[in-house]
Image 1 (cartoon, helix red, strand yellow):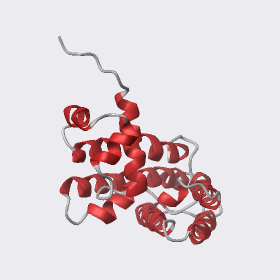
Image 2: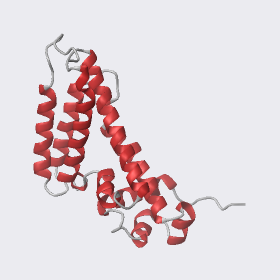
Image 3: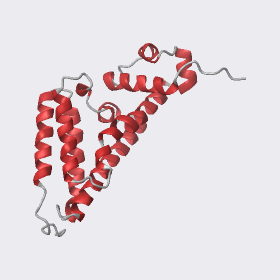
Image 4: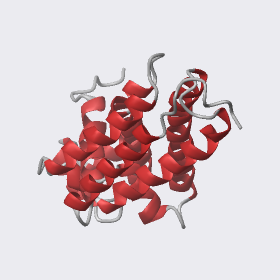
Length: 204
């Protein structure tokens, strides 16, 4: 009979997620993971197979918790330009808060910068993240286009632009949170300025 687990697996993954988020993949050792998860080396390998496999689960956890919460306001039926601008304003507030978490940036973007050129699994995860963010922006922009606030023909271009802007801001916050906050304010103002008078946005 298998011995029952004496630990919370989800809590261990979350602890590993936060450690990888703070330090990056290469700088996080198995000894670090032992201390932060409460699992010894043998248990870590038995449960997750390898450091890399645990890292992949940590990335999934990050997407399903941190990123999902960040973009939650863009996924409802009322969401449009106002909610996109609101996302950037919330990030600006976070970056100005002085929270240690704010200066970490985005785990997915950090992973793309650290491992994307040489780790196929990390690159695939980063591409999936980029596409997910683009889709969330596009959904909100499409609703704005239906309301006549922006031309429908600009939705794809603008969703790509917003995604690139956000990913760049995630890198910027790691070196200068105040500048990253100012960039978020600028992005919010630009998005708000996209709103056109009803009936103007015809898609041309």
